[in-house]
Length: 202
Image 1 (tube, rainbow, N blue to C red):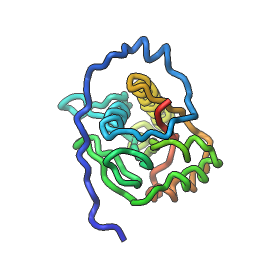
Image 2: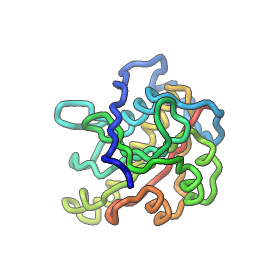
Image 3: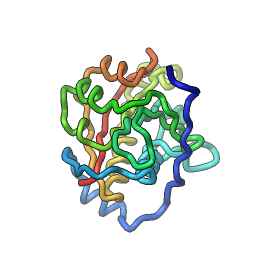
């Protein structure tokens, strides 16, 4: 039984780097092998902000969203992150913070749910993008399903480009057992996993 949810305030993201968008696009590759060195909490914060961070007072985010309905959720499976205990965390964009959902190193469980892909087991951390489709289909009907997948692609590419700016590597993993990933993350019935992105140092 977990204590009340632990909230971890993340470092503020930076808005400038030494890598141009053109350089990040040129260098972007799918990377499946990582060094054993841990990630920093600042790097995790920057990546989460790039995925779904809020960019203005109206609540708009780094990734475009049909109707500004924001169906995506982002989870972090932390294994080797400095100053962050092992666990599954959910990103809260409004406060730029993480909420501990489940403690313990769950990389092995997530790896098994993703057809034993070693990049997930050996990475310091993985990001999982999920969606609550009803947030969009209630307005757009079945067309909203397409919009959600488009949005997930935007968010995943943001992770890729931000990783390049941080000199990190990642890959989009789409091969997994949906229900097994839901069990690992303890997702509610109306929330579906869309992709897993392990990340680490090249």
